[in-house]
Structure formats: C-alpha cells, structure tokens
Image 1 (spheres, rainbow, N blue to C red):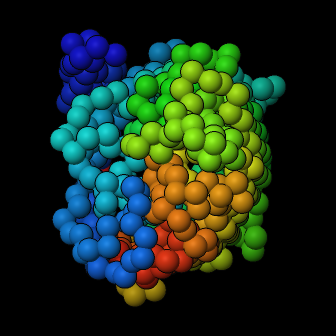
Image 2: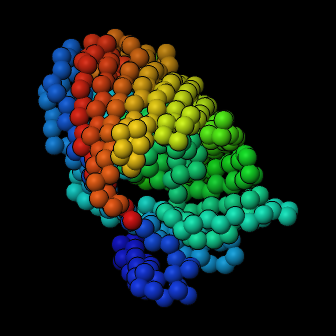
Length: 448
C-alpha cells in the first residue's frame, strides 16, 4: 500500500471513529475502535562462550534493548454478518543481539519489527463474513478488538480474507499466546515447530474459512509465504509458493471449568533449500548457495516443502488457575522460512490469578519449553552454516531449554506492568555456549 493512500485511509477511519466515540449512536453501533501500546525492555548478563558464529547470542552483557509496538484496531460493520477491519501499526526497536542467537527468542514483540526506527505500516486489512447454518441460535458478541458488536449464529461458517495474521486464527491459547500480556518467549507464543506463513512483522495475505459449532470448530487457511527467508516481501508466485493450515478444536467442561484442545496440521511450499543439499554443495566447493547475511539462499528455485503438526491443550482447574500443554513437530528437511528455527518443541505451564493474594487483576505465569531440531538441521549447523536466526559455527548439539516466569501487575485502568525472567540453557542448541543465560525484562502495556 502506497504511503499517501495509507494516510488517507487512516484519516477516513479515525475521523468517523471519533464521531462514534463522541456519541453518534447511529455510527457507534457500526464501529469498533481500540488501541494498544506495548514497550518491552530486555537485558541479559554475560555468560561463557566457546563458539562465536555469524548468529551467536552476544556473550557480553546487553542492556536497554527496547521494542515498541503501537496498534490501532478499527472495525466497521457493512451489512448483516459482514465487517471490515483495518489495523495500522507503528513498530520499532530491537531485540537482544539483533533478535539472533536463540531459537526460542526472548521477546515475542520483536518479530513484528523490521527496523530500529519506528515505522508506520498496515498490519491487518481484511473482510469477515458470517454465514448461519440451519436454524442456528444467535449469540451476542460484545464489541472488542477486531470485533464489532453483533449477533453471531452459534452454528456458522466464517470467511476472513485480506491481510491477516494466521496466529489470530490458529494455535490460540488463553494462557500462553500473547506476548503483550502473557509469556514473552517465541516458542510459548505459538507452537515452535509451526513455521507459520508471515512476513518479518508477522503478517501475510490470504483467507481463512471456519466452521464453528457450539462445542467444536474446524478451520482451514491458505496464505502467501515470504519471497525470501524471513523477508518482508511476500512471494507473488502463489501456484508455486503457499501455505496451507488446518486445525480442529474441541471444547469441554471439566468439573465446571473450561478446557480446550486444538490439533493443527500445516504444509508450506516455498523457495526454502534442503539442508543436506546445501551442505553437500558447500562441501563440493559451491558457495553460491550460501549467503553471509541470511546463511542460505535458494532464490528462484521452488520445491522446498515443509510439513508438520501441533497439539495445544488448555484446562482451567479453578477460577484462578489454568494449565497448558503444547507439542509440535515438523519434518526439518528444508530451511525455516518464516517463524523460527525449531523443528520439535514441547512446553507446559500454569497461570495464577491474583485472587490468591487479594490482587484479582494481577497474574503470575510459569512455563518450561524444550526445543530441538532435526538431524538434517543439525548437520547444516555443524558444517558451520547459519540460518536467519542461529548459527554458531561447529556446534555441539543439545536441546535448547527455556524457563520463563512473569508477574503482571494491574496498576492503573487499562495499564499493566510486568516483570519477566527467562533462563536459557544451550542457546541455539549449542552445548558449547550453554550459558546459562539470564534474561530480564520489564513490559508496559496500555490498551483501551
């Protein structure tokens, strides 16, 4: 989207939204307007190191690594069951070591950031349409983020099309999903082995079709993949490069407390090269397949296929405690193309509400995640090659283990302040650089 058109759309949306906020009920019933701003500052202490490759976590102490995201969520009802949503976003800042050196990276907001200086861009711009099935009952949906106030059929098909984030639809979890209010680590934000289609900032263009029933749901998504690994530009050759995602979801009550399981399958096609073919080419003296900045390149050659699955479970055991468990796997034969360099991941943890200590709006989260990679991926890294996030040179493989704890305090209306600690062992799967690495963070989040 060209910059002047972007500003024109922004002006139209917000002028009308302001009128809605000022009390024009004929307008306010059709509009949804929200805003969030999240600032995260991270640091880590110095730790011992043996290898020092192109994508190694800096072993000297780092501090004042600040990220900032500012998002406007505007929705407009069009006709019965339909609405359009527009999310302009400003993001800037940086992660520890340039967001490199740890596969389960420590700040989930940095994946949206393409530059240190704040940049304005369109995050989401999509149309959503609900189609009722049979004699479905209508349930009231309150106005919220990317949700206009409307009556929704309890049994329905929903189609969303445009610029979206697949993580808004798939692999949801009410305990471990949102780095703006929950765990910060990438591999606790989404299933680590799901290389979900997205540009550098986490967005793509595509469509999601959902079949929603009172106790279960199924959804299918087709989306564009990056033209280059971790790239901002999406690949226009959609017959050769695309991502398909399928998920089925089942909910229940266990002793009156809600629970849910989600099972996900995905298949991505892109220009991602095969790890072993790249290693063999380098050993034969062909360095054309290696790029000193991104580690690998395969531009203009299609046929890279990655497929895998993910399991995602959440269960509340009281009004104040919830548990989660996740496991994911991908074939690990071709290079990671969009999310992060994880081929196997397992995690679990809990969330405690502050009612236990008479601060009901506060929250504590504790989680453990263990990440791994395939034998092909190990051979690639042991050969001294690098992906876009990790690569220490000759590595001594060991699974990457991360423990995270946070305390989120509600200090003012709509404002929370969180203290976060992560213990990272064997960053980037390299026992030579085992650390441990102690990462501390302070997060401020405001929304309305």
